[in-house]
Length: 355
Ligand code: PHE
Image 1: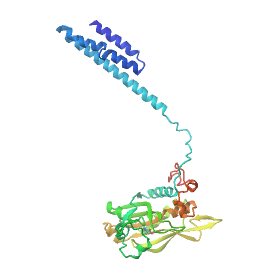
Image 2: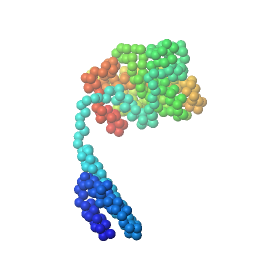
Image 3: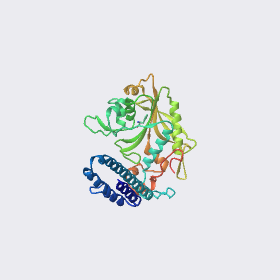
Image 4: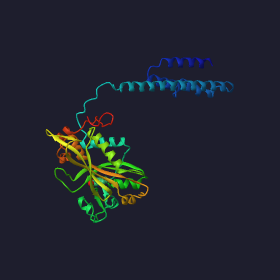
């Protein structure tokens, strides 16, 4: 009996001397391993006479439980110690300067898309998307442009099949249809993305970028459109005032329709946006045609709104002084090095859009 107390004392003395995981492991083997001191006593139980057996067995079980408990405490201690060591070796000093990123630049088109997303988010617009490969229904028919409508020719469409069912979208306007068919009104979205037309010269490339805007609710008016455009242009060009004019125009999917010009001037070879007596066309817009709402399962007696489409590449050229549209898509690393943005310069409204 007393031997057991002595053994316990010895074992716990050894526990107090443990320094490493290896020490712990050998103590485990020494006590509870196959030939361990405690295991041996369990084996000896068979030879003890009945009366003593019960009490001895119970004391032995208690000792085993104590050892197991102590073993797990030490295991946990070692685990915590190792974790701590790992964490200490992996700390970063946030007061150190950010390493200069010398490789990789953000393309001006991506930068402008981020800037626009940021500006329109302030006005409550969320971002919607649609595929580059569209069906002709979403790209034309649902947008009130039936087969044989002359507007279809204006778009120089890339068709992908003989039956002219699939095409590369010629504008981002089909995202209006997708959004309205998939969600319930009101709608307040922008949709930036790639668009395609069979056209190529200094100001046209077969692939270019547009940003669509759609705001449909119960009382959205043309005045709201003008206000939002004025806000967006001032923010985008980072000017306090912007001269803007609406010219009557025609799009099958809006009525009335307008094209928007902004004022500019060129002084000493530098372009100033927002003032001056020259005009530059930058976007198409109008009130969503009731037929479009009907096609998109929206009741035109309850809902009305505006839509606009703006060329993203054109905006990037104006803001960042790039004069050949084709250079955007030539993947010339020197060009990108010059006109690209640092990946840490994320546009935000509060910090300035692009610095
Ligand atoms: N989709 C038209 C274009 O590509 C632009 C536009 C969009 C006009 C929305 C009116 C409303 O030219």
